[in-house]
Image (cartoon, rainbow, N blue to C red; front, top):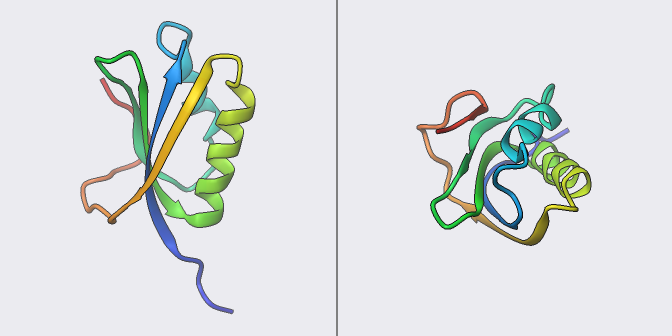
Length: 94
């Protein structure tokens, strides 16, 4: 059995995603998933999520967020990026 690939993604959520507990709910939704990264508000009113982990865990995380927070999300932009060495345990960034 081959080990699953580790991926890193940056996702931007647009819509009514600030001031509604989006970051805290995201952190709760990802509890138990072995992921590194952060979620933070951006000055343009969007929310940025950066995740690194096994591809299946990242997919699970994105699906949970899209389903649970769909009422607040108008558009999602997700990009796979090079693995970074600076990501620690998943947290809410300020």
